[in-house]
Image (cartoon, rainbow, N blue to C red; front, side, top):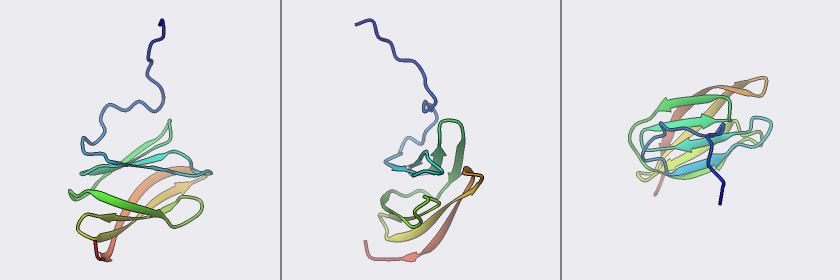
Amino acid sequence: RDKEFEPGPWDHSNLDMGANVVIPVPTPLGGAIVIGELTIAYFDGATTSVIPIKQTVTKAYGIVDPDGSRYLLSDITGTLHLLVLEHANHKVTNLKLEQLGKTSV
């Protein structure tokens, strides 16, 4: 009964209101990717990296590399993207999103 919540390293108050996908990032990078309607964010407890995206709803994802540095993303319109986590010394330094093309929904 005497327990209280305290902010931790994963506490972020400015997430995209339309965030609907959380992707765990495997080691050695670790962390999580949060995909919203307007942004994609990477968090690892100490580092935060956010990029804006065209408004959409991501419905599916798939990991490309075992180290978690590339992901395929698909949205409700069938657009296929490649999300790249640029990194150095096992720390994510930047996010890059490339449109690959269209596929069936």
